[in-house]
Image (cartoon, rainbow, N blue to C red; front, side, top):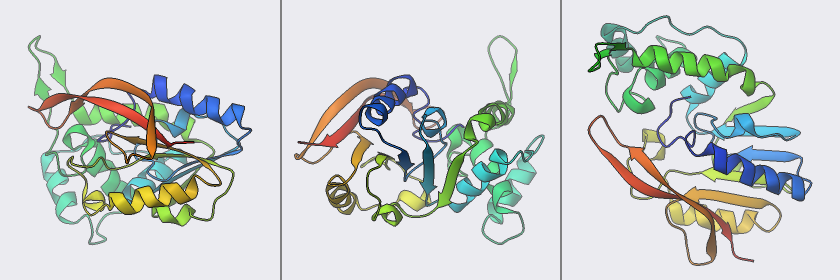
Length: 241
């Protein structure tokens, strides 16, 4: 699924790394407290897979597709604007708001990246961003089977033991969705310290406190908006042993 900060382009590295930890440590529960577009968890093999996220419309959309629900055929600008104006009024079902907000906004930025209108490329081909995102999510749907999607805060997993927990958190110093704008990074890292006592915790970030070590890194081209792209070093961190 197209999603801001998605790991879809580096999952070929991240998934094997996580899968190895699962197999070597006999893990039967895999948790993503910041599941986003589910672009990592959908390829993880584990007895129990739990995907949590604070964004209620996102979780509702993932559940809808997981259960075989249809998606809008197209999203005209007028519909996009009306859903955006009424996204929290109850006029539209949560999954529908999620579909319009994530699939019809540029770069999956949930009404924050602007309307992803059809464009004509240099070769004359018409590119329909919404249709591309819709088809990608529909293609992903079979891999969502068996995942327990939960609308919750990451702290809801505080009592978990013996799990592999992968956290793809809102990166410090980067633009976030509304649900991530007040994210307390210091509080999060303290939570990870506690969780690492009884679980294996892996965190995606660009930086981490000194008591964590980088266990993997890869240069990645990040797209902020239609005109701004930059290279960043994606990293995985774990607490130092």
